[in-house]
Image 1: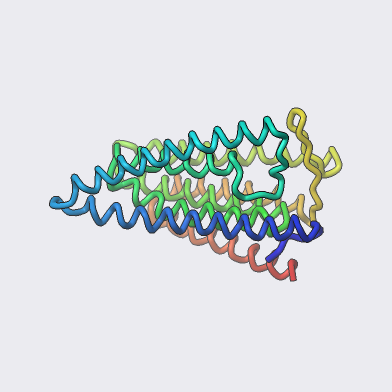
Image 2: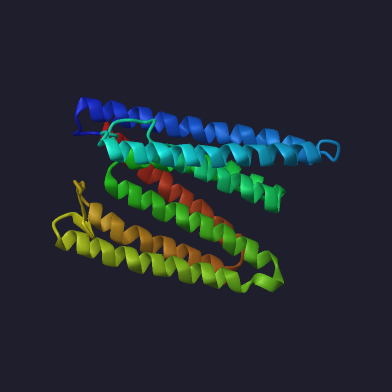
Length: 258
C-alpha cells in the first residue's frame, strides 16, 4: 500500500525503503537460523562461534564504512533524501547487526528466539509507519507494547522469584498511557502539530483519531493490570483481547486506505 498525498518520486522511495527493510529483516532471520544450527551441535559449536565473531568484524567494518560515507555526503552537500544506500542507513543496519551478533555471542540461545520475533515485527511496524494513518501507528504501538508486557507478566507469574515484575510491567503500561495522553492533548491543542526542539511534524488525522488515541492506551493499561492481578490464565486471555483489538483496528484502517 502506497502512502497517500506524497509526490510520485517520494512514494516510490518509500515503497523501495519498506521493501529493503523487509529484505534486511528476513535476511537477518535466515542468518540467525544458520548460526543457531551451527551452535546447537557440540561438533559445530566452535565453528558457529567463530562465524559469529567473523560476522561481528564484518559488521564493525560496515559501520566504519557507513560513517566515512556519511561524512563524505555531508562534506559534499549530497542530497540523500530519496536515496536508500546512504551512510546513515548503512551505519544503522550494520550497527544493529553488530549488537545482535554481540548478544548472540554473549548470551547464546535465548537471543535467537527474541530476534526471530523482533525482526519481523520491526519490519511490519515500519510498513505501518509509512503506509497507514498516523493514529493507527500509535494504536498499533500501544497494542504491541501491551502484548509484550503481558508476556512479561506471564513469565513473571511462573517464577516465584520475579513475580513483582508483573506489577512493574503493569506500572510501566500505565506510565506509557499517561505520557501518551499528555502528548496527544498537546498535539491536539497545537492543531495536529508536534514540535520537538527544532523539528516539527504536522499530521492529518482522520475522524475519531483523537478518541482512539485516548481510548487505546487506557484499554491496554487496563488489560495489563488485570493480567497482573488475576494470574496466568487471565493474562493469556488479555493477550488475545489485545491482539483482537489490534486486528479489528487494522482491518478498519486498511479498508479506509482503499
